[in-house]
Amino acid sequence: MSGRGYHSRVVTHGPATTSPRVLVVDDDPVIRSTVAELLLDEGYDVDQAADGAEGLQLVFRSVPDVIVLDLMMPVLDGWAFVDRCRSVPEASEVPIVVMSATHSLHESAERLHAMGVRAVVAKPFDVDALIAIVQRYAPLAA
Image 1: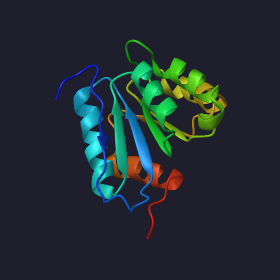
Image 2: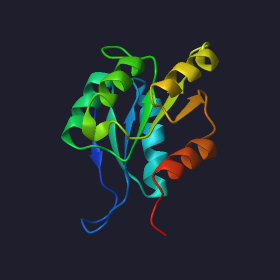
Image 3: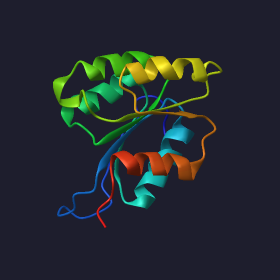
Image 4: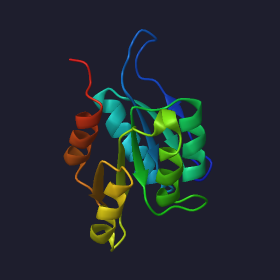
C-alpha cells in the first residue's frame, strides 16, 4: 500500500446492503489500513484518506455516517478538517471521532468537543473501545 494520496472505497457486501459508511482519515498508512480492516471485519463500508484535504474531497462526494480522524497530519490537519467539515451543511452533524498521539490531547479534547467532535481517543488505542465508539454513532443492522 502506498502512503500519501491513497484512498479506497471498499464495499464488503453486495449492492443491496445498507451498511453504515465510515471514513478513516490518517496519514499513517499502517494505522489507516488497520482501522479500516477492523471496521470492515465488523461489517462497515470504509473509505480511506491519507490527509484532511483528501478526506474532505471524499466527504464532498458522499457524506459518510462516521468519520475517524487523525489530528496531526500534513496538507490539512484534523483541526482544519473539522472546521471545514462543520461548515458544509450536509456534513455538519456527521459524528467525528478523533484519534491522536499528541501529548496535549487531554487539553485539546475540550476544544474539539466544542467544535462538534463526538469522541477523542488517544493513540495507541484500544481496538474494542474504538469499535464501540463507532457502533454508538453508526449502529450496524441486526
